[in-house]
Amino acid sequence: MSRRIVFVAGHGAGDTGARGNGTTEAVETRRVVNALLRRIRGSVAYPLERNLFEDIRRNQGNWRNFFRLGDMIVEIHLNGFILKSANGTELIIRKGLRTDATNQAITNALARHFKRRRPPTGFYFKNLQNNGVFAGMGMWYCLPEICFITNANDMRIYNQNFDRIMDDLARAIGGADFIQPAPPQAPSTGNQLTHVVQRGETLESIARRHGVTVAQLAEWNGIRNPNLIKVGQRLVVRLGAPPPITPQPPAPQVPATPPAVTGQNVLQYSVHVQNRGWMQWVRERIVAGTTGLSLRLEAIRIAISNIVGGGGIRYRVHVQNVGWQDWVANGAIGGTTGRGLRAEAIQIELTGELARTHRIEYRVHVQNRGWMGWVSDGAIAGTTGQSLRMEAIEIRLVRR
Ligand SMILES: [Zn+2]
Image (cartoon, rainbow, N blue to C red; front, side):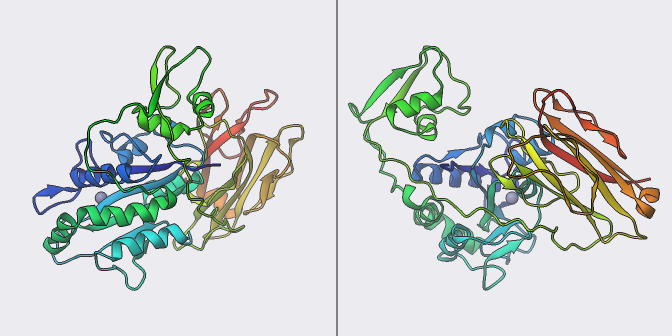
């Protein structure tokens, strides 16, 4: 599976982000993303006129369909602080994830130019909306804060050495796909052909036919949504482009028990998704699983940590060819793994004292149906007898 590198420019669409030294974060994150796109073969960007944070928060703009299986997401920000002396670079990674070689390379590249914050590592383990969402979807995601937009010295270095900083950063992210951007020149001729889209063709079949990738075709033709091409559309195919080699970050290790947390009655869950295995544990109100990818949920683990007053949680899963399984509790596996069976429905309920103080509410995303309504306390979410897979789930614990 080849991974598409997707850049996200932080803020935008009316949100300037931090301001300082005569510019705004929204402007600079776009400048950085454009520079990185020119330097990494096959890389793409989430539409630069949009604000991904808001799109996710409001669940608008079709963002889920944009991010696909295997994407490697790098969301660019610049830091800002009231104290203008704050300076340096850091890479934000979700709590509980381990850093990998690409994370290290990114931090090292930026630390060549800026002070490493949180010395000696330059890593900041922090839970944010977007890194939670992508962890839940099993995506590789990190967020570099390039430097401080509010610090005069950081911004002097950033502006004076911009091209070199971008070269270093692009090498770290792109690996073998790094290309030194050529100085602007007249468009070359001859080294490309035009493909006219025929009925029944997809970007994927066209890419296969010419020995290039979907990401390359999309990039060469400015295609934002690879699922939207029209019969008769003319596509540029560059010839002699070297085959893309994309870095393969190791799959994150997902522990069988939820990460330790502070706070009381903390609900966490992890789902097992077709072709992808166990996803990272997420906290309540975060979607686990995928939508728009036609991948079935196969199993789930649900746990509540630091329960006040006793009690727990139990659940049972309706599985293809099996029917309702027995109830399991407190982080045990409901559903199946390794058998290629879809989970079709689920019931969840609280037990003991916890059931007296709280309600458990949940909703599931079902094949061909989309999100179904919220249900609570042992009601069935999903379908039975209709051969429809659950694809994603969201759960919340509500005080009575
Ligand atoms: Zn920001």
